[in-house]
Length: 345
Ligand code: HEC
Image 1 (spheres, rainbow, N blue to C red):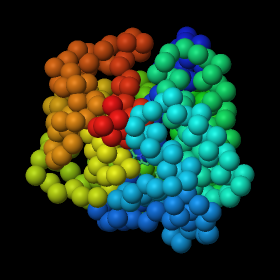
Image 2 (image 1 turned 90 degrees about the vertical axis):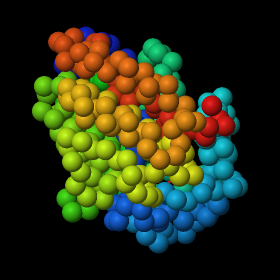
Image 3 (image 1 turned 180 degrees about the vertical axis):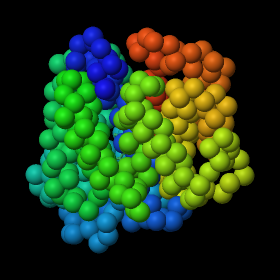
Image 4 (image 1 turned 180 degrees about the horizontal axis):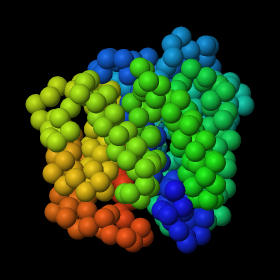
């Protein structure tokens, strides 16, 4: 199954590449489903207050859409650095969160601590081939996500993100059982009847990394449509998923913590459909990134424009027999394409 994706690459380079895929997953699209557009509850953040110590979360907090980041404490430091795309601040943010976890433990600090590792993992993966650093960070991230899950048992997004890491490590180390257990865990965040957008998007990102003829890839395409429909609040025309004029408010849209999640999502979704060889649908999806506000100032606007120009070549690269020339889904839109403020570029 998945081995065909990276047949002879060193396993951990595979990990770097895979882990790169997770960015587009983790948070591709916002949280708990319910009615799209519902502000949703804040989960760990509600429990933690503004970065301080917290009580028990009141709600199965599976979304933070529509809420502003905390204004003080280590959490504020995280969001400032993350929104600014300030990679150099990672050690300082990590230390602040570690200190807060030691002095006034709270679920949101643990939650963010895991994401710091994930963020750095993406940066390392983008930088190329520091296999040792990638492996160390992946292990640390797994530990920290396990702790975050314990501290935030109500937050199903953590199943998606942890499962993503497990499947990435499983794939990179040619361990199909581990890969499948990661997928199983992500599926916990997509229960039938009450799927979360984060869960569906994560499945999309992980499964769509498989070769186009692999059944896992077909499941990834299905997860892409599931995500689109969750965002749209109902069935969409799969031949022409044009979002122009639709009022899709709330969770799938850009908001304070994810200034460009709308654009980032459609970039990845277009890539999946390009990989499936569905040219017109892919093009419509790429164009959806331009619907509504936010495209002009977006970090990845040039990448998306380039895809529209190169679409045929992109499809050809996916369709040929060489898995090494397949452009990664979402490209280098790891964390920053969705989370970086325009000012932070
Ligand atoms: C495709 C767009 C996209 C990408 C790429 C992305 N995210 Fe997100 N992220 C989102 C969205 C949308 C949410 C809001 C989810 C919700 O409300 O449940 C989110 C939520 C989060 C949260 C939770 C915030 C909170 O207070 O609850 C963190 C932390 C986070 N992302 C970090 C990351 C990191 C680290 C990366 C890279 C590894 C990343 N994200 C990549 C779109 C994205």
